[in-house]
Image: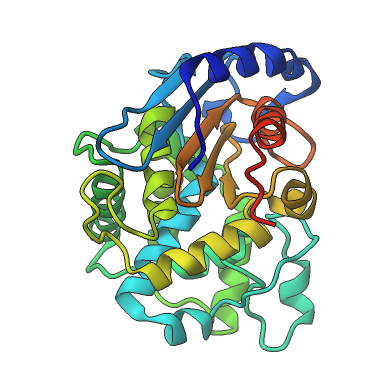
Amino acid sequence: MINLDRNDLVDWLEHVKIYANNGKVVDYIPALANQQPETNAVAFYPLGKENDVIHAGQADYYFTIQSISKVIALALALIQQGEQAVFSRVDKEPTSDPFYSVAKLEVEKPAKPFNPMINAGALAVTNMIRGRNSTDMVEEILTLIRLMANDESITFDHEVAQSEYETAFLNRALCYFMKQHGVITGSIEELLDVYTKQCAIQMNVKQLARIGAVFANDGKDPDTNEEIIPDQVARICKTFMVTCGMYNESGTFAINVGIPAKSGVSGAIMGVIKESGGIAVFGPALNDKGNSVVGIRFLEKLAEEKHWSIF
């Protein structure tokens, strides 16, 4: 069990927040370009109902989770379709290519994405979620996220979703390529509608840390211990977080921090501390890999102090 108190979070966040000067807020999604680099927050949600979430910084600030949603969509697709169906359309291997790359799809036979954490793989996974239309599919994702966060108020940011939908040229290209090769089916515009809304789901670090705590508790509610997702699904998701969760910085992160984690280009990172709880960090200034510079440095500092690497 990791022992953390609020003073730890306050001190370490104060220590690393200067690193925001080394990053840049994402600008290829217009609605995210106005985020302020100095905004930062962290929360830790421990396992066991006798413990309360602890937090520091602007913990009530709402951000969109972006690629962190890929983990939730993967869990949902595995629950609804099963491992065989999911991994017939997306592989299980890490890649050194950027998360938006189309290169490997062109050379691999069959042309299926390397893993569910890159954009091509995430689009293929979202395409498998049940629903008569995009509204139903988004609601399926929201239902699971609300259950994991224990908060029925969670929804998506309409402005960010529309901004992403209107500028999703690379993702459209990925979808058309995969449809040509039978990896995805149905309407590409409907799929992009689901995917952009999925990425635009908004929450704060306290809510995101609770989702991390569900994974830390092998898929069970961190307070009641009731199953939310099967432990095998939780295990698969955590493994992908270790191997692919931090884009093509995942290997470095595994060495320097050593916990399952997933980042998003909004500046959020969700981490999983086995048998202890979930942690979420937010800082919108990104490094050249697309990861929060403040979030990375905070987790490196915390991992060093608390010896929490799984390796």
